[in-house]
Length: 635
Image (cartoon, rainbow, N blue to C red):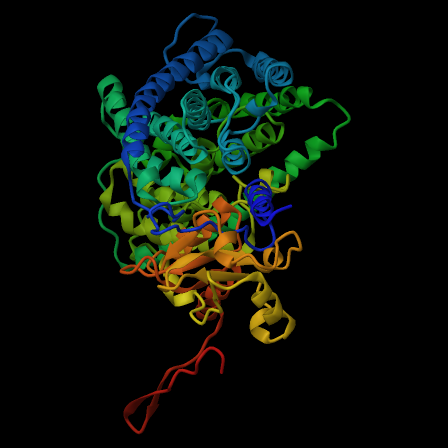
């Protein structure tokens, strides 16, 4: 083989095979860096966001109409099951005259839901939000299309036959399924499909309660797991569209109307914070009891298809003695926060609603958690408020505000959605005087819940399946560090004019500089031409007379010194390399350094130090402040 044919064969092998040791054979720059593979500059939004936003707005309108259809469907099933009439008017099962036959109605509903779950889709079981979270985290937000119609139908049957659930859970799940379905029809990324899922779910909640801001915050806290303009904008406009349709169809009055409230004083405010803390403890107990009941059902020697019917027996028995526990119970919530129930009625409703809802939910039927939690928490808050008002009237406690705080605090504690709970309670009642008590009470509940349990009522189910749900949303640390501050600036380089024989003799000397896995190659002008790996330089298939310039074939994989580490890390992943050439901003041909995976990991050292290393830096000596010098991290 002549040198020419040897070179040609060698070049062909490089193109086809390359090297996977640390960094593939680095591409060549040629004369300029015009063809350089460099990471894209991240932007807040782009034109694709406009497209996704337009689709999200249409989803919001569709979700609003679906919410109305679901409400009408629940009304139809309720009227047929409890009153034997054909009507879509939303009515309460509490006024029925079925006597003992009322026990059979939820059982029949449970049987139908069990059949639908077994031969339709098991995903219709539960209250919907955990299932949507699981699809977001594990399946690129791909919810099976049949859920779009199976979930609302099964929920309408379960609720219409007396199930103690709210309509908001099913419509959130249905809106999310619709967004996912549309995202699977369109040519979108997994991240964009997640945004469409969250937009549909948030629009569904906004359409039910007329609470667009709370719906957006719910999407952020429970579905998106991020706060970025490219996700926030579509979701927010979807909720605006859904709420606008709701206003046009049913009006803009608050869902839970309350009389005007007076601004609380200091002692009253402290009392509301205490009530929130108590509800935080109760929310932990409620969560554990609900999943304890679910564990009991798991041990039953019958197929899970029959569990909703068994849970229906408990719903029917409780409903016979406490008719107000049947159905969605939005009227109960309004009566609680308006102060229209006595202490005895509040206590009875609270206990019976919890029994009915927890057993039904544990049985795996289809229904939501928000309305039952609001009923239970509101009743408990009102009871505590009445008790404090009786024992310490000088505190100026308003039991209606206490009920409002209890309603929101139990959700903040059980779902660990602090801002959602505060904003939701405000939007659905329109009471600005309740904002400060809500913030204090919900934060106390959130604190107690975070101290006492790892998972929430929304995440416990999927956590048991091995799904790790994000609990904290922080700014990306890598996006805050630029490459120039993390890369290695003292780089061992090779020249294009060197031959393999020279480099191999150099390797044989065994100096520390020869132990690297990749070496940048520069030309006579000091311009970067590429990188060659140690493996390539020692490969016996290359003749020792070849120059390094002849071995560098492809355009380089580089990063500018002003890029962020996040952009650099994504670039590494995209090209499956372990190091990047760092070039200057003003002189993009000139080598600045090398960035490796190890450099990126090392950059996290400062973040960990800030999070874990505590110290006192100011001291008072003889009336003056003395600042203690900060030791370097390596000291």
